[in-house]
Length: 364
Ligand SMILES: NC(=O)C1=CN([C@@H]2O[C@H](COP(=O)(O)OP(=O)(O)OC[C@H]3O[C@@H](n4cnc5c(N)ncnc54)[C@H](O)[C@@H]3O)[C@@H](O)[C@H]2O)C=CC1
Ligand SMILES: O=C(O)C(=O)Cc1ccc(O)cc1
Image: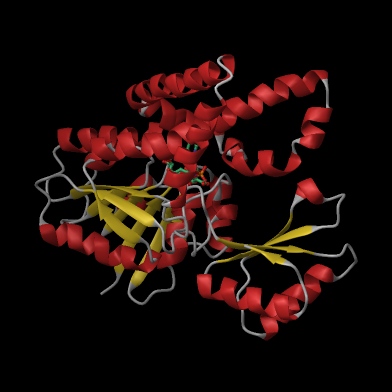
């Protein structure tokens, strides 16, 4: 018997989920597109088994429905689904970055013999669209599920079993608690990154040396400022009350720094860095997802042609899987720093030994 999985919104997250499921025995993945050109693209890229522009056709007989559209559209999609004759026992889930409002919406609708379980894969990137989708996106990341209290355990287990294909680690949470925590560790950093980039952009309009010198570390800590505007408009408006509280606390943190500087309180500044460093060093930073994505090595490389190819070949010959290579821009004119990213810690460790043996200077 085939299990039908319908994905509404085959973008970065919907497309990545589709890739996790497609080709698995007994699973059939149907993508819903809201534009004709998108439907053809999903199929030609091999992300789904079939695609349709019809809401009804996508939902018909589905065993699982994944809502992967911007947060602001989730409630509308839920309401439309609730009016369709869905398959008995069908599980509807979503991937929205906020969980309280969609949980409340689902609880207010009579879903008959259908279940809603909120979800949030806590991995992603600043990129968007099906072009950025990857079957590896969720590997080792946390995947939050927020089932309603009265969910039959079999329904919850069925979704968990399907999500094994993402290789993510499932965490069960209450929706409001999810929104408070994720507000602090994901939504607030996005606001800070955007505000910081816009502040520097203002200075740069008068003196372009700002962007010239800002390349390296500034780019690293502001990567998420390049995230998709519509996705983030919806997340922040949806989590508005949590964000307003967090921004009050943020203003206090910044005011404390203003005080330290006004009072020339060197000891206080040191203490702030010590405290932050201490907490940060205890973070489980080897986990993929959110802000620390992969296992990285940095190496000094001489600036001559073919070096990237040579290093990639040396690693490939030893069966070491390299996930990404980047020349770090702050050092473009100072040949040169290369960042090698690996999905497995063991690959990173083996690469380090190999490159050191070839006399490269390696930094973790
Ligand atoms: N971007 C990320 O890193 C993460 C995003 N999420 C959540 O996943 C959901 C989807 O986000 P992404 O896949 O990143 O976005 P995306 O922009 O890559 O994909 C959005 C999808 O929704 C479809 N869509 C349908 N109607 C739309 C409309 N009127 N306007 C815009 N798009 C429409 C688009 O065609 C596209 O397939 C959002 O609810 C987001 O909060 C969750 C985890 C990580
Ligand atoms: O790119 C990053 O570091 C992210 O923070 C990605 C991300 C964006 C939105 C989410 O709801 C979860 C993860």
